[in-house]
Length: 473
Picture 1: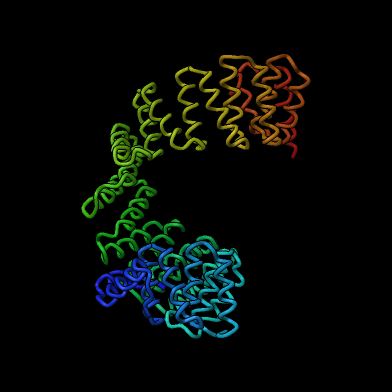
Picture 2: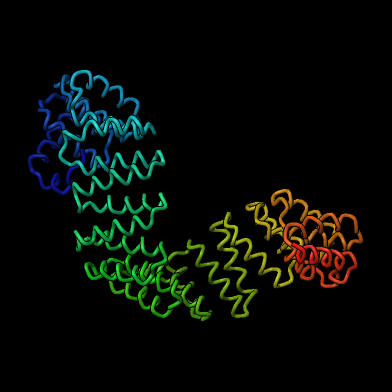
């Protein structure tokens, strides 16, 4: 269906056909076009994203060639592109009754079944087409996609291997098989596959890159760097290899090297926001906060919607002692990504630091709404409430948190301590009994909540009791 559009533009014969067809429509007259001409015209309008005119061409062709299977299949393909798969399927069922072994028919059926999420039927149709087509690699890839839709990644990998056996230069298949290895959690097999592939095809950039990625996922960072270096030798402007190589050096805590590699990409393309942000992250990890802020800000200048860069800049300002100034950046990051739990947490921590406990509480409450199973947020929320409200409200919050985090030991120790602070010894003992039985070694949390409670008779006796029990065990 899809052919080279540049060829069309330079094909005088095609231009003549287009002119003849347009003139026919304008003057409301009839002209004869053979099947090949109709197909070329339909392809032209399809490539020009004028599906309505492409369908008009095919329908006109069918008035002159009503028995043409080629044009019926072409019409079905246009229905696929118009998201009218069921209509396309109706046409193909008619064609199949006449030409059941037509490979174009089976390929088109496969595409329609795929669009309808009927993967098993799509696989069957694509398989029927395989023996009678030339470009088998693309059809093997289509079959692999359907197995992916069924979450059958080993089967998808097998068909992608068949695609690469047909056409080792099919980079799409290389990237897709890497993706499937990752989803199947077969990273060692992935590394072995790409190592073998690079031996047979040493000039494949995609193979070296994915070998590097496989090794990187296995934590073999030095070997991954070597693989990325091979990809760069083949194409020194292949920036993804630079990015991943730099990420390896970041994980090795060699931040200066990582920065140098990110900067090398600027020789081949304009600086991207991601590269500038990553340099900022390197400086952040190296605790060079001013440099980190400067690069986060540069990333924002290129991409004002880069939420991570806004948050990073805000956090760096806080480290630089400019906590009040950091708020604007953090709030902007939240505006861009309002469901990001980490961002709300950072905002809550920042306002807590500024002793604006009410705003801090509101931020923490957003975290608890977005991620109620995060046990730490409930104790942080309790801590801020204690600062400017009362212990009873903090207890209510922790009891709510316990409904989402059943028998979470930190919350239990907190509840025991707070109940003891309100002289509710009986309730405190209930929570402490649960907490000590789950993890005695976490009893230091009591002192973190209120050091005076470690001297309380109930706490002293329970520590002694459980310590002796552990010694006996």
